[in-house]
Length: 186
Ligand SMILES: [Ca+2]
Ligand SMILES: [Ca+2]
Image (cartoon, rainbow, N blue to C red):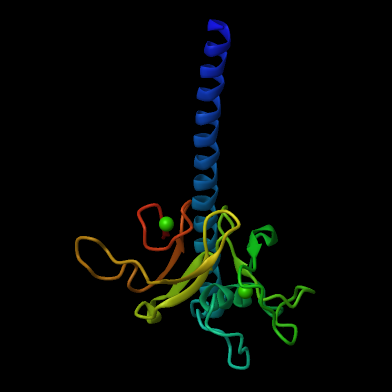
């Protein structure tokens, strides 16, 4: 009886720490993913002279949902773009939309977003549009719901972070934008 209880306690401890490790690894993966994406965006700027747009091109009328992350996807996966592209395994499509014609070098017409390790779109803000409210379909693992999200501000100064650059925001483990576990880069 005592042995069973002790084994039970040990198993419980293992499962708990295992869960924490798993969480940490997704957090780490997402952090690395955002850093990589920031590098790719800077490379895009070197090649194209401007940061990627965070607005969908005219003619792509699929609504405002996920528009900012979808715009980044279209820029980095455009057929004519010559720079490095993000890992295709990162692509998600939480709002399930698609474009009428081919807009990227991919065969799929799906209007993807570049996702974090929990499967939520990584929100991308061009510095010219920090004042815009973004609509995003995100949520905890596999349970996305409609949200509104804003660019991040510096807590002490109250002004936008990275005023001349861009922001990349993951909603973090809770899948909700604007909470403490958000991961923001650069
Ligand atoms: Ca989409
Ligand atoms: Ca969050």
